[in-house]
Length: 333
Image (cartoon, rainbow, N blue to C red; front, side, top):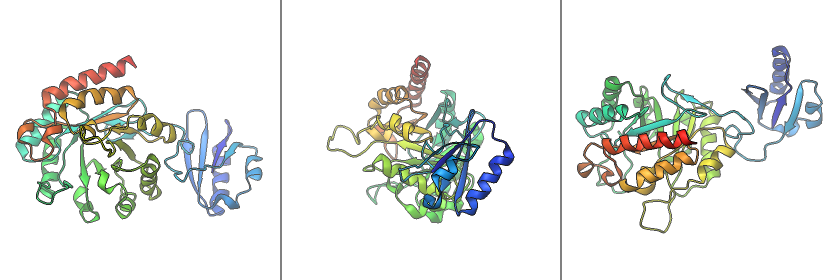
Protein backbone atom coordinates (compact mmCIF):
# COMPACT_ATOMS: atom_id res chain seq x y z
CA UNK A 1 0.00 0.00 0.00
CA UNK A 2 1.18 3.54 -0.68
CA UNK A 3 -0.03 6.83 0.75
CA UNK A 4 0.73 10.04 -1.12
CA UNK A 5 0.90 13.08 1.14
CA UNK A 6 -0.46 16.47 0.14
CA UNK A 7 1.87 19.31 -0.75
CA UNK A 8 2.43 21.49 2.30
CA UNK A 9 2.44 18.64 4.82
CA UNK A 10 4.72 19.61 7.70
CA UNK A 11 7.51 17.42 9.01
CA UNK A 12 5.70 17.03 12.33
CA UNK A 13 2.48 15.89 10.61
CA UNK A 14 4.42 13.38 8.53
CA UNK A 15 6.27 11.99 11.55
CA UNK A 16 3.02 11.61 13.52
CA UNK A 17 1.48 9.62 10.67
CA UNK A 18 4.57 7.43 10.35
CA UNK A 19 4.50 6.70 14.10
CA UNK A 20 0.81 5.73 13.89
CA UNK A 21 1.41 3.44 10.90
CA UNK A 22 4.44 1.85 12.60
CA UNK A 23 2.29 1.18 15.66
CA UNK A 24 0.03 -0.90 13.38
CA UNK A 25 2.98 -3.25 12.78
CA UNK A 26 3.94 -1.83 9.38
CA UNK A 27 7.32 -0.82 8.03
CA UNK A 28 7.18 2.62 6.43
CA UNK A 29 9.44 3.58 3.53
CA UNK A 30 9.58 7.32 2.85
CA UNK A 31 10.22 8.52 -0.71
CA UNK A 32 10.73 12.28 -0.93
CA UNK A 33 10.10 13.46 -4.49
CA UNK A 34 10.45 16.94 -5.90
CA UNK A 35 6.72 17.59 -5.72
CA UNK A 36 5.30 14.93 -3.40
CA UNK A 37 6.09 12.55 -0.58
CA UNK A 38 5.14 8.87 -0.88
CA UNK A 39 4.88 6.57 2.12
CA UNK A 40 5.30 2.93 1.18
CA UNK A 41 3.67 0.59 3.69
CA UNK A 42 5.13 -2.91 3.99
CA UNK A 43 3.54 -5.68 6.03
CA UNK A 44 -0.02 -6.80 6.70
CA UNK A 45 -1.89 -3.78 5.34
CA UNK A 46 -5.24 -5.56 5.58
CA UNK A 47 -5.64 -4.12 9.09
CA UNK A 48 -5.45 -0.57 7.73
CA UNK A 49 -8.79 1.10 6.94
CA UNK A 50 -8.18 2.70 3.55
CA UNK A 51 -11.12 5.08 3.99
CA UNK A 52 -9.79 6.24 7.35
CA UNK A 53 -6.27 6.75 5.97
CA UNK A 54 -7.41 8.53 2.81
CA UNK A 55 -9.69 10.75 4.88
CA UNK A 56 -6.81 12.24 6.83
CA UNK A 57 -6.21 15.92 6.12
CA UNK A 58 -2.62 15.43 4.96
CA UNK A 59 -3.23 12.39 2.72
CA UNK A 60 -3.87 13.00 -0.97
CA UNK A 61 -4.22 9.41 -2.24
CA UNK A 62 -4.06 5.81 -0.99
CA UNK A 63 -3.44 2.88 -3.34
CA UNK A 64 -2.95 -0.82 -2.78
CA UNK A 65 -0.04 -2.35 -4.73
CA UNK A 66 -1.14 -5.61 -6.31
CA UNK A 67 2.32 -6.71 -7.51
CA UNK A 68 4.27 -8.92 -5.08
CA UNK A 69 7.40 -6.77 -5.42
CA UNK A 70 6.91 -3.72 -3.22
CA UNK A 71 10.24 -2.00 -2.55
CA UNK A 72 11.34 -2.33 -6.19
CA UNK A 73 7.99 -1.04 -7.47
CA UNK A 74 7.85 2.37 -9.17
CA UNK A 75 4.49 3.03 -7.51
CA UNK A 76 6.29 2.68 -4.20
CA UNK A 77 9.13 4.99 -5.29
CA UNK A 78 8.08 7.20 -8.25
CA UNK A 79 11.45 8.91 -8.68
CA UNK A 80 14.32 7.10 -10.43
CA UNK A 81 16.86 5.63 -8.04
CA UNK A 82 20.41 6.82 -8.64
CA UNK A 83 23.25 4.57 -7.49
CA UNK A 84 26.19 6.82 -6.64
CA UNK A 85 29.58 5.16 -6.07
CA UNK A 86 31.73 8.25 -6.66
CA UNK A 87 31.06 11.74 -7.99
CA UNK A 88 31.82 10.52 -11.52
CA UNK A 89 30.51 6.95 -11.24
CA UNK A 90 26.73 7.02 -11.03
CA UNK A 91 24.00 4.89 -12.59
CA UNK A 92 20.33 5.82 -12.78
CA UNK A 93 18.18 8.77 -13.76
CA UNK A 94 20.15 10.82 -16.28
CA UNK A 95 23.45 9.18 -15.22
CA UNK A 96 24.84 6.62 -17.65
CA UNK A 97 27.27 4.00 -16.38
CA UNK A 98 29.85 2.42 -18.68
CA UNK A 99 31.19 -0.77 -17.07
CA UNK A 100 34.09 -2.34 -18.94
CA UNK A 101 36.87 -4.84 -18.46
CA UNK A 102 37.86 -8.45 -19.01
CA UNK A 103 35.66 -11.45 -18.29
CA UNK A 104 38.29 -12.69 -15.85
CA UNK A 105 41.36 -11.26 -14.18
CA UNK A 106 44.40 -13.11 -15.52
CA UNK A 107 47.41 -11.10 -14.35
CA UNK A 108 48.34 -7.70 -12.92
CA UNK A 109 49.66 -6.55 -16.28
CA UNK A 110 46.49 -7.62 -18.09
CA UNK A 111 43.97 -6.00 -15.73
CA UNK A 112 45.96 -2.77 -15.32
CA UNK A 113 46.50 -2.45 -19.08
CA UNK A 114 42.79 -2.91 -19.78
CA UNK A 115 41.77 -0.62 -16.91
CA UNK A 116 43.88 2.26 -18.22
CA UNK A 117 42.59 1.75 -21.76
CA UNK A 118 38.87 1.63 -20.88
CA UNK A 119 39.19 4.65 -18.59
CA UNK A 120 40.78 6.63 -21.41
CA UNK A 121 37.84 5.64 -23.62
CA UNK A 122 35.24 6.85 -21.11
CA UNK A 123 34.48 3.88 -18.87
CA UNK A 124 33.19 4.81 -15.41
CA UNK A 125 33.55 1.36 -13.79
CA UNK A 126 36.05 -1.48 -14.17
CA UNK A 127 34.67 -5.01 -14.35
CA UNK A 128 36.66 -8.20 -13.96
CA UNK A 129 35.93 -11.69 -12.71
CA UNK A 130 37.90 -13.01 -9.74
CA UNK A 131 35.54 -15.93 -9.13
CA UNK A 132 34.14 -17.38 -12.36
CA UNK A 133 31.16 -19.75 -12.59
CA UNK A 134 31.86 -22.06 -15.53
CA UNK A 135 29.71 -24.74 -17.12
CA UNK A 136 32.66 -27.13 -17.24
CA UNK A 137 34.61 -27.90 -14.04
CA UNK A 138 37.76 -28.11 -16.17
CA UNK A 139 37.60 -24.51 -17.44
CA UNK A 140 39.49 -21.62 -15.83
CA UNK A 141 37.48 -20.51 -12.80
CA UNK A 142 39.30 -17.35 -11.87
CA UNK A 143 42.10 -16.36 -9.52
CA UNK A 144 39.86 -15.99 -6.49
CA UNK A 145 41.05 -13.72 -3.69
CA UNK A 146 44.22 -12.91 -5.66
CA UNK A 147 42.03 -11.66 -8.51
CA UNK A 148 40.32 -9.20 -6.17
CA UNK A 149 43.71 -7.93 -5.02
CA UNK A 150 44.71 -7.32 -8.64
CA UNK A 151 41.44 -5.48 -9.30
CA UNK A 152 42.22 -3.22 -6.34
CA UNK A 153 45.66 -2.53 -7.84
CA UNK A 154 43.99 -1.55 -11.11
CA UNK A 155 41.61 0.69 -9.16
CA UNK A 156 44.56 2.35 -7.43
CA UNK A 157 46.20 2.96 -10.81
CA UNK A 158 43.10 4.41 -12.50
CA UNK A 159 40.61 5.50 -9.86
CA UNK A 160 37.90 3.37 -11.46
CA UNK A 161 35.52 1.70 -8.98
CA UNK A 162 35.44 -2.08 -9.44
CA UNK A 163 32.61 -4.50 -10.19
CA UNK A 164 33.13 -8.22 -9.65
CA UNK A 165 30.97 -11.29 -9.15
CA UNK A 166 30.30 -13.11 -5.89
CA UNK A 167 29.49 -16.82 -5.95
CA UNK A 168 29.20 -17.83 -2.30
CA UNK A 169 28.13 -16.42 1.05
CA UNK A 170 31.45 -17.68 2.40
CA UNK A 171 33.29 -15.18 0.17
CA UNK A 172 31.55 -12.04 1.45
CA UNK A 173 34.45 -10.93 3.67
CA UNK A 174 36.72 -10.93 0.61
CA UNK A 175 34.47 -8.28 -1.00
CA UNK A 176 34.96 -5.65 1.72
CA UNK A 177 36.80 -3.30 -0.67
CA UNK A 178 34.80 -4.11 -3.80
CA UNK A 179 32.66 -1.15 -4.91
CA UNK A 180 29.82 -3.00 -6.67
CA UNK A 181 29.06 -6.68 -6.03
CA UNK A 182 27.70 -8.56 -9.04
CA UNK A 183 25.23 -11.42 -8.68
CA UNK A 184 25.50 -13.58 -11.79
CA UNK A 185 22.65 -15.14 -13.76
CA UNK A 186 23.17 -18.52 -12.12
CA UNK A 187 22.79 -17.01 -8.64
CA UNK A 188 19.83 -14.74 -9.35
CA UNK A 189 17.61 -17.03 -7.28
CA UNK A 190 20.19 -17.98 -4.66
CA UNK A 191 17.93 -16.53 -1.99
CA UNK A 192 20.24 -17.10 0.97
CA UNK A 193 22.97 -15.16 -0.83
CA UNK A 194 20.51 -12.40 -1.76
CA UNK A 195 19.36 -12.09 1.86
CA UNK A 196 22.95 -11.78 3.02
CA UNK A 197 23.65 -9.08 0.42
CA UNK A 198 20.58 -7.27 1.69
CA UNK A 199 22.47 -6.71 4.93
CA UNK A 200 25.53 -5.10 3.33
CA UNK A 201 25.87 -1.45 2.45
CA UNK A 202 27.11 -1.88 -1.12
CA UNK A 203 25.50 -1.53 -4.55
CA UNK A 204 24.46 -4.89 -5.98
CA UNK A 205 24.39 -5.50 -9.75
CA UNK A 206 21.76 -8.22 -10.21
CA UNK A 207 21.87 -10.12 -13.49
CA UNK A 208 18.74 -11.68 -14.93
CA UNK A 209 18.70 -15.47 -14.85
CA UNK A 210 18.99 -17.10 -18.25
CA UNK A 211 15.41 -18.42 -18.03
CA UNK A 212 13.94 -15.88 -15.60
CA UNK A 213 10.86 -13.75 -16.15
CA UNK A 214 10.96 -10.04 -15.36
CA UNK A 215 8.72 -10.66 -12.36
CA UNK A 216 11.15 -13.27 -11.02
CA UNK A 217 14.03 -10.84 -11.51
CA UNK A 218 12.21 -8.11 -9.61
CA UNK A 219 11.35 -10.55 -6.82
CA UNK A 220 15.06 -11.36 -6.52
CA UNK A 221 15.76 -7.62 -6.23
CA UNK A 222 13.06 -7.54 -3.55
CA UNK A 223 14.99 -10.11 -1.50
CA UNK A 224 17.97 -7.74 -1.38
CA UNK A 225 15.88 -4.65 -0.68
CA UNK A 226 13.81 -6.37 2.00
CA UNK A 227 17.05 -6.78 3.95
CA UNK A 228 17.56 -3.03 3.95
CA UNK A 229 19.89 -2.60 0.98
CA UNK A 230 18.12 -0.47 -1.63
CA UNK A 231 21.18 -0.05 -3.87
CA UNK A 232 20.23 -2.52 -6.61
CA UNK A 233 21.09 -2.28 -10.31
CA UNK A 234 19.18 -4.58 -12.69
CA UNK A 235 21.11 -6.13 -15.58
CA UNK A 236 19.56 -7.63 -18.71
CA UNK A 237 22.06 -10.13 -20.13
CA UNK A 238 19.98 -12.21 -22.52
CA UNK A 239 17.70 -15.19 -22.04
CA UNK A 240 18.07 -18.75 -23.27
CA UNK A 241 16.31 -19.67 -26.50
CA UNK A 242 16.50 -22.22 -29.32
CA UNK A 243 18.57 -20.29 -31.87
CA UNK A 244 22.25 -21.35 -31.92
CA UNK A 245 23.55 -18.26 -33.76
CA UNK A 246 23.84 -16.27 -30.52
CA UNK A 247 24.62 -17.44 -27.00
CA UNK A 248 21.35 -15.94 -25.75
CA UNK A 249 18.57 -13.70 -27.02
CA UNK A 250 19.01 -10.11 -25.85
CA UNK A 251 15.60 -9.00 -24.56
CA UNK A 252 15.74 -5.26 -25.18
CA UNK A 253 12.02 -4.92 -24.47
CA UNK A 254 12.99 -5.66 -20.88
CA UNK A 255 14.66 -2.24 -20.62
CA UNK A 256 11.56 -0.01 -20.98
CA UNK A 257 9.40 -2.59 -19.22
CA UNK A 258 11.66 -2.77 -16.16
CA UNK A 259 11.87 1.02 -16.05
CA UNK A 260 8.08 1.18 -16.22
CA UNK A 261 7.65 -1.36 -13.42
CA UNK A 262 10.55 -0.31 -11.21
CA UNK A 263 12.53 2.74 -10.14
CA UNK A 264 15.80 0.80 -10.14
CA UNK A 265 18.43 1.53 -12.82
CA UNK A 266 18.71 -0.94 -15.71
CA UNK A 267 21.95 -1.80 -17.51
CA UNK A 268 22.51 -4.14 -20.45
CA UNK A 269 25.29 -6.67 -21.05
CA UNK A 270 25.53 -7.20 -24.83
CA UNK A 271 28.69 -9.34 -24.45
CA UNK A 272 27.11 -12.24 -22.57
CA UNK A 273 23.85 -11.81 -24.45
CA UNK A 274 25.32 -12.42 -27.89
CA UNK A 275 28.55 -14.31 -27.22
CA UNK A 276 30.14 -12.69 -30.28
CA UNK A 277 32.38 -9.61 -30.31
CA UNK A 278 31.09 -8.44 -33.71
CA UNK A 279 27.55 -8.17 -32.28
CA UNK A 280 28.47 -6.14 -29.20
CA UNK A 281 28.50 -2.75 -30.94
CA UNK A 282 25.05 -2.92 -32.61
CA UNK A 283 23.46 -4.33 -29.47
CA UNK A 284 25.14 -1.71 -27.29
CA UNK A 285 23.75 1.04 -29.53
CA UNK A 286 20.30 -0.58 -29.48
CA UNK A 287 20.39 -0.81 -25.67
CA UNK A 288 21.29 2.86 -25.39
CA UNK A 289 18.45 3.73 -27.77
CA UNK A 290 16.05 1.62 -25.67
CA UNK A 291 16.82 3.80 -22.66
CA UNK A 292 19.29 1.69 -20.69
CA UNK A 293 21.02 3.44 -17.79
CA UNK A 294 24.32 1.80 -18.62
CA UNK A 295 26.25 -0.92 -20.43
CA UNK A 296 28.48 -3.74 -19.26
CA UNK A 297 31.02 -4.69 -21.92
CA UNK A 298 33.80 -7.25 -21.89
CA UNK A 299 37.14 -5.81 -23.03
CA UNK A 300 40.39 -7.78 -23.35
CA UNK A 301 43.76 -6.62 -24.63
CA UNK A 302 44.34 -10.00 -26.34
CA UNK A 303 40.97 -11.74 -26.93
CA UNK A 304 42.55 -14.55 -28.98
CA UNK A 305 44.42 -15.74 -25.90
CA UNK A 306 41.85 -14.88 -23.21
CA UNK A 307 41.37 -17.57 -20.57
CA UNK A 308 37.63 -16.94 -20.53
CA UNK A 309 35.06 -15.77 -23.12
CA UNK A 310 37.54 -14.41 -25.65
CA UNK A 311 35.02 -14.78 -28.48
CA UNK A 312 32.73 -12.12 -27.02
CA UNK A 313 35.45 -9.72 -25.85
CA UNK A 314 36.21 -6.56 -27.81
CA UNK A 315 39.65 -4.94 -27.93
CA UNK A 316 40.34 -1.60 -26.20
CA UNK A 317 40.29 0.17 -29.57
CA UNK A 318 36.94 -1.38 -30.44
CA UNK A 319 35.58 -0.40 -27.03
CA UNK A 320 36.68 3.20 -27.58
CA UNK A 321 34.74 3.26 -30.85
CA UNK A 322 31.68 1.74 -29.19
CA UNK A 323 31.81 4.27 -26.33
CA UNK A 324 31.96 7.14 -28.82
CA UNK A 325 29.02 5.75 -30.85
CA UNK A 326 26.94 5.20 -27.71
CA UNK A 327 27.55 8.81 -26.66
CA UNK A 328 26.30 9.93 -30.08
CA UNK A 329 23.11 7.87 -29.72
CA UNK A 330 22.45 9.23 -26.24
CA UNK A 331 23.00 12.79 -27.44
CA UNK A 332 20.55 12.22 -30.29
CA UNK A 333 17.95 10.98 -27.80
